[in-house]
Image 1 (cartoon, rainbow over the protein chains, first blue to last red):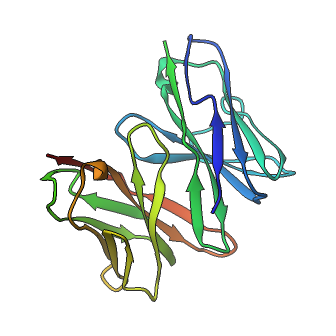
Image 2 (image 1 turned 135 degrees about the vertical axis):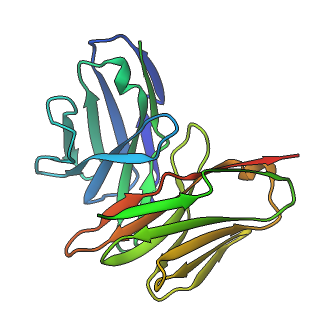
Length: 114
Length: 114
C-alpha cells in the first residue's frame, strides 16, 4: 500500500491569492496525480506529475493556473494560483502502484475561496 | 469516449439491510475495475479491484462482481452499518499501451439510517 499525507488539510483563502498544497508519500513512486473534486461531483484529473519532467496537464487545466513541482520520488506540490470562488474544491493527491494495480489517494485538501 | 455510469445516484437504507450498487462502463481496452469508498471530506479508499478474468471479489461485507461481456459491475453491501454511509465510486482503467487511463464514475451516495 501507500500512505499519503497532504498539507494543509483545509484552508480558506481570499480571491486573487495563491495556495500551495503539499503531498508526501511514504514510499518512492514514479507517477503522482493531482485531482480536483468539486462539491457533489466525482474526481477530475488535473495533471500527472513525473519526477524529473514537466507535469502533463489534462484538457481544461494549464500550468500557469496550477503549477506543479515534483522534486523527488516521494513529494509533490500543486499551487492554485490567482484563486477565484470557482476554485473552491477538494484537491487530492494520488499515486499509482502498478505492481499492485492499485491507485491510492491522499486525504484531500478542502479549499474555500471567498 | 470512455464513460462510467453509476446507479442509483443516491440511496437510503435501514441499518442491517443489504443493498446493491451498479456500474456500467464503456472503457476500452479494459484493464481493471475498482470500487472505492469515500467518506465525506476524505479521500477515496479502495474496496476491491478486479481484472478482466475475475468475476467476483469480496472484502468483508463488500462483494463486487464483474461481467466483462456486458461491461457491468455491482457492489453488494451486506448487513449495512451506519459507518457504511459514504459515496461509492466505480473507477475503470483502460490500458492503451504503456500507461493506464482512469475514468471515474460520479458515485452513489449511500446513507444508512438507524
